[in-house]
Length: 413
Image (cartoon, rainbow, N blue to C red; front, side):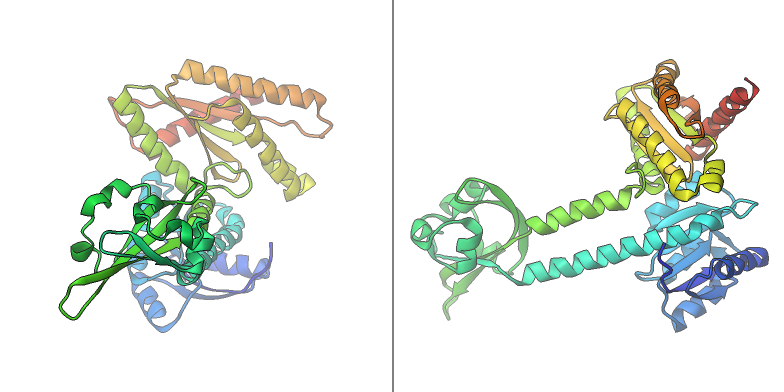
């Protein structure tokens, strides 16, 4: 990982955790220019007098919470850390705008992934900023312009219009402008009141039609040219093709919800999807089973063969999972070697059959595999109780406990 220099504010009221962070930065020789605030009040003073690339804040502070710190910030990305491990806090943190969420453990292992988390968060924010710059650039150039009379018949078009729509001027001049739009029925026979609603130069997102019949998303602004008495002489339509912007937004949306290594949902997106799965299954009276997965022996593989081999191990397990689960199932990487599998319309016995198929596939690979370690994982299954309606944190914790039962059972075999 590239050792980039960042200006970081650490908001932490625990002296030991402050020291652990400083030690981590020193031992890893990270190029961080950091400032430590021991309370929300100190954080406010730091933010007022300094600018930061990123803020790392503990959830519970002596004089407030991480959400109080977030209110002080404008666009600075935030990572929330907590020793509580409360999934409900994680869900709220993501809804409030936190960029990531880490659970602090007693051994300080979370500090091992913190630099990677910082890098990923800042990279996502930079991509979002670049997308905004690209959007503004695309909006300001290459606009297609067409001028119509009061009956919406085209009088003239510019070169950008020809390039965008594929029509030559003689092919559209004299034609009604509704040939350009999927919503032409709304502007036929004067149904679209340009004078009252379009004189403000407001923009509407629409789909336009090219000469070849293909559609493209665009921003359409309309205005009227009037004489001194306020009578409409002509109408002007300005079309901005936003195809590239839409595609970039889709890519950014995927990136923001995806775990970079595995292509599975990241923790933030997974918790949100689980909420939606619960509501969907409740409305349709479907069973919902979740599966907590822990990749076996990942630490030993990392320590013995290196982290690249460990990444290959995780990626292989993920690909096997994707091959067997349904498209309607959800796969989320909670972090490190832990995954959450969401199985709608599936009870525990059926889910167990699915997981056994996956385990069998891994066992078959181990027979053929020349690697000096066994590829396997432990799992725990829990069916969502729509009568009890447990909180997400409790539900995941229960599946985690079932996973440990499975892991301990395998050790005794």
